[in-house]
Image: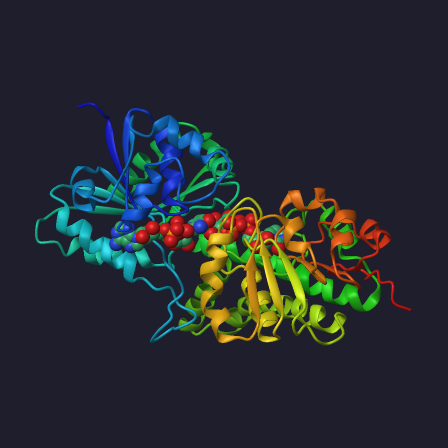
Length: 463
Ligand code: NAD
Ligand code: UGA
């Protein structure tokens, strides 16, 4: 046989694609196949314009594609030949029925379990890569073990911790790899087989093994802790604006304590992305379903604070632009939920745009990677409001004739813009609302802008 082992990943998204590309690059003797129901996505993975923008990803894909990395829509064949199957399908928040708006929608995940049963003719290890509610593996086991063929499936949990924009680096040099398994002989053997994959490039001390439930729950808790830090500093930013304290100075002072640490303390218009809100709401739903009301309320406040911060930003724009933005040209600098990605899922930009369009502003959306997604996100909103939207990748062209700039995404290129040129082309008075605190506020003020950072004193030319 040409390959030592056959690895399959069901779901060729932001996690499945990059994760399997790195596994294939690091394990040239394993055949790695990624399958998806979305034929267009698979076509893109097989071309030079990958379906997701991620620095360094194309190089890794090119190294392994056609050698031991394959993208396909033939799910049945993939399942048949696989020894180990990673399931990396989407698990969004449920939008209907019981648990709507809170619980995970497990329909895609469950469908894969049935497909695995239908197309398998021998034992396999099934790896939960998707983020799932704690104890989902139990349900997966029930579906898989019900098969009439007498096949044994061992379910292992291996949650993914990569962040978008740094996915390749996170996969190559992870803080840890987590593998949870049943503590039986078969479970531990399956865990060892999955560990063997990552041990090709991840130091042994960084591979953590736990029981199944700890692995599943650790993923939700890690995201909740990260999001909680952002909501904490964002809560402080509101207090700073009332007291003259500077949230940047506070982040530095507080983060210098080794027990707290400096990372993830940047005040912002709020966290976005497909997972923080979804995973916390899932944690809240699970806690509530076990009757742990105080635990649920505690974590829910992290999401509420995030909504408050997004709304506060919009309110500041309307208030400072003299309580009306009707017909005013306002540029959203950035639309992706963070820099270095084209992903706009749950981007605070969507909320800001919706609210400003309801106020009948004339928006121009500028972003180096996310305009296609922005167009899709705003299509329905634009029709339902009296505001207008244009899309312009060039920030200079976007700003010409505008009254206001609002920084939504922390793209490093925005720091380097020629703001004198931009100011000269704008209507007056000209406003900057820095939702990421990335610009040189003093300098912008000296150029002539009225500047509104987050959690710092504003700089205006009004008496
Ligand atoms: P995604 O939506 O980008 O990709 C999921 C893919 O699964 C889609 O392409 C979809 O077509 C495919 N799919 C759905 N059902 C299928 C089926 N029955 N058969 C074959 N393909 C199917 O999602 P994602 O961002 O990659 O996230 C996947 C999981 O990983 C989620 O549970 C998410 O919470 C978790 N996660 C995401 C990130 C991230 O940065 N995006 C990081 C860590 C964990
Ligand atoms: C996050 C986690 O960081 C990953 O570990 C996890 O695997 C992933 O979620 C997931 O489960 O999907 P991601 O959402 O891709 O990754 O990106 P982050 O870097 O965590 O940023 C999330 C949001 O928080 C962004 O909108 C970002 O701008 C914002 N943020 C981040 C802040 O507002 N302030 C900060 O200090 C840091």
